[in-house]
Length: 127
Length: 363
Image (cartoon, each protein chain N blue to C red):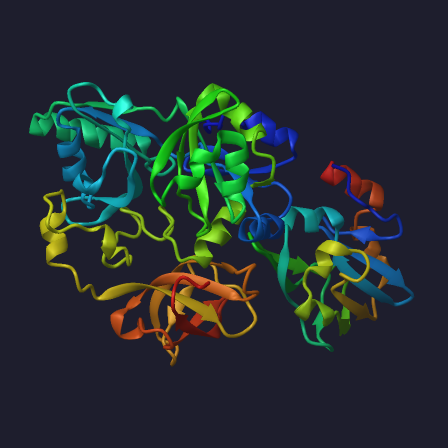
């Protein structure tokens, strides 16, 4: 099975992605991760304004069969969470890089990108 | 120890199923998605490979006597071609396994006596074979005990359309089979025992066939393939016990009265555990269902609390119900908390969530 791996994103080994836009970043989980989880039925996300350190646990995602912790690819302050997921967690399955995003961070530091996987490296990890 | 594989393992792998270990077997857990498979069974029909279930046959003049003394229900009520849900208990009345006992058709019985087939849970067949043989010898009964788990494949066709689909494949006679009864049928030239049973709460059939012919039977029943993931959400919505999870002789010993399956205990028969159970009909703890009243999902092992937060029990099974769209679960609580409507709490990753005891089945 092949999975979508957008080439404009950075990845954590634990399957979260980050899309950088200036000093903000949007965060979600990968296509591979949503497939591994199966039907996502619950997402627990932090409150806006919370400060997170890179690779800190920021929430929980649950499918019918499993519970997984979520880790942030980058440090930053939570500026938005995807509240649509509270009523429609299946968006993570349907559109993991689009409508199924999890949160947005502001004040991110591009120097931290060095610690993340490139799309090529992530593809190798899940191969 | 290497996992045992069902005869259809390669067929499932080809279909891109994901697998999980269950009772020592490598079984398909999901084909498409648990939700898709679950909905197929509730709304139309789905097909499960349940070849991990055990099959033991007991035949001979004293077969009925042995079955009567090792299972809690009354096998004398069974005519050939009928089945019953039952439990196997130790001398303390603790459930060792739950099972369905079938009285074999006369044609499958030896001239001199009676024959039964019963279905232990995955991984219990060896233990039950030893139990049956040891007690037969101890009581000097005349019957054969055969473990035929490696000879039988088993698939479960479940859902409101299962009768039509099976009638197409096996003939119209299957329409006349009453719940728990079974008939001998033929699918693509393969002899099958078709029992009107299953563990999803829907109308359906469990089909036993020779191990090597499993693919022919599976292929003759074109519908949504389903894995153990959907089987778990389906059985949980109906409040059915899962061996090893909702009871376990070692880690969570329970009597049939605690587990809420009083109807399988025939105290007017003589069986191992009977005397202990006669004194335990009103247990201190009861098996209950509950629904979460806040966002979240209860999981096995989470604490159950009273309304004030004092721990009163443990969740044995829990999930997000695909049919209800809310967290539901099963577990044991002191009887004073067991009435439907009682407010309780479930500790979800350290945080207490409001929940309420509810009637089971949940739907």
